[in-house]
Image 1 (spheres, helix red, strand yellow):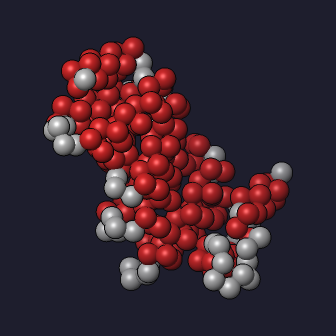
Image 2 (cartoon, helix red, strand yellow):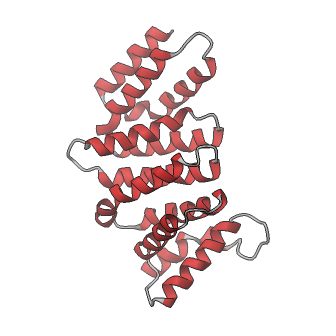
Image 3 (tube, helix red, strand yellow):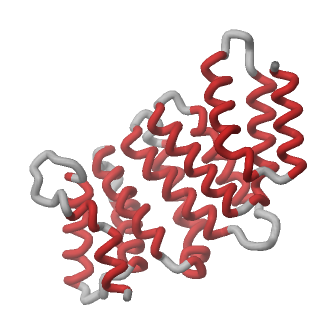
Length: 226
């Protein structure tokens, strides 16, 4: 039932509607504006409709505050979970470029980065099939991996979870993750204890998703480190 899916998509967000200054304040403001737009145009409320409206909002708001962008991306994350994969795969490359550009311009704002990383994971999974990953997909995954070592613990945790989700869905990207770990471990200095711990925590999360060759690469790098 599509109407049930749409209702469930934002259910926890709607529960906070009307709470001045409360949780999901920006999300509810954005959601009300998007639904007003859909209703005005006579468009049925569906995951695809929300995706289109939210992307339009994201790309047309050049001077918005980080909290607003964060609200749009949080809603987009929910919508992408429900968009049929064949539809999302055709939209994913262009959407990814817009989201990456926005995230790169807000590197100091966790409120933007966290949902941007979650959205990127959805877009990566949608683009991957049985064939080897394209150069564009590999580059997008490499961009996501960089945030697994971010100084902000919430951003770092979101990036590690997002990367693990992608790898669990598509082991074809495990060589790219293994190269990332290998390069970062190889560049560590004796004083880089914190970075080493971040890397080890990431490896712990995703190691089971590595194929045999990638696992061997990471283990060899770890042995050299110790």
